[in-house]
Amino acid sequence: MKITFEKNVLESVINDAMCAVSEKNTIPAIEGIYFNAMEDGKCVMTSFDTEKGFQSTVECTVERKGRYVINASKLSRIVKLMPDSSITINVNENKLATITGGRAKFELHALSGDDFPSIPMLSGEKGFKIDGPTLKKLISQVFFAIAVSDQRPMLCGAFFDIVNGSIRVVSCDGNRLALREKKCELGSFNREDDEERMSFIVPGKALSQIMKLVSDKDDEVTIYLTRKHVIFKFENKTFFSRLIDSQYIDYERVIPKTAKTIVRTERTAIISALERASLVTEDRALGQAKSCVKCEFVDDVIKVSSSSVTGSVYDEVIIDKEGDDLLIGFNCRYLIDAFRSADSDRVKITLNNPLMSIIIEPEADTDEGERYLYMVSPVKMN
Image (cartoon, rainbow, N blue to C red; front, side, top):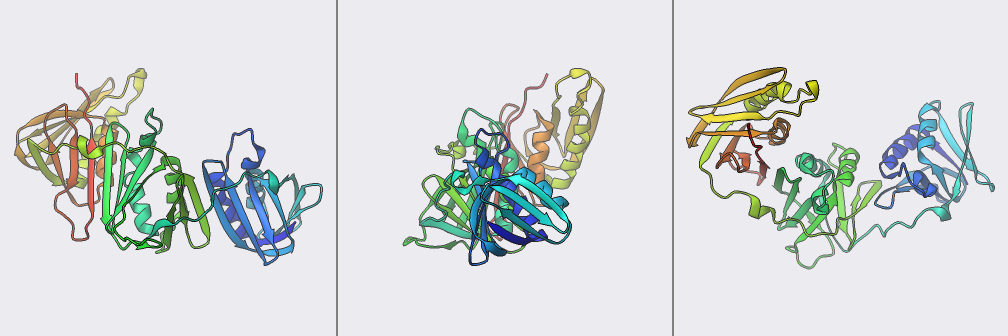
């Protein structure tokens, strides 16, 4: 195999492919990038860690076709430090890859393309289309509430529910719940019934890579579903991931439907007060555990306070309140994450008692059919 790329093109694709390269594994092939050079001047580059994968078809000069796997980490560092010129990768019959650019030359041992694991079929009969920025925004606004590790595997991913031209994304880590819903133009294909419902759970690790791969341009993303995988197709690259095969929790059941206290306030004002409180609540001096932030809803203010072994803080936020006064405590960082992900100028906060979760919603319904809801569980106060 002998192929030549422009450096900027090869470097960009390698950077994207690193998202699905396994770093610690007993299978050497999945620590590399699979090059499949074809006679038509194209090379398909693939990475696959057996859970998620990336593939891109790259224009290049193919002098000799072939299929080989080259260690991704070493190749990435080499290409990055190569001079700004074309880069040639030449693999001989002994599987020795010679990488040249300008006057620089490196040699790496390659593996046969036959050693690379088989990837799933990158197409499906069921799916939809959505513009990239919308998808990226929806994921970013619920990502903070995805569990990193949990005995319930479904909580380690985000739940997607698509029906009647509306897409809903939900995440929950046991302490927080995030819900975003948006009506948008969802293109469909190969479906007789446009009102067919699709729902699936995408792992958090895969979603973090999707946010990096989606550009801020209005690029359309086509999402295919198979029985075990979800496939995201962009203009010239494809990312795929194994789905979490589980039933998602009945999140609607845990959302309080009544409220004894309703508060309306400026979102930025309460974020500022909580960030000041976090200077005290996140103090780790003397090995003490994080303290909670106390929020006292009384009359027309929220009294925000906290104390730790090193100091204390007190602040007030002006509000419009209906209902009972209430004192409740929270993990400060959890509350900040929820208010930051809410994107309306004013928010509505509903509460019941010091042991029930707080609900954060927009003060008024939007004209664009967007909806968000964030729920944060309280903590017991001393």
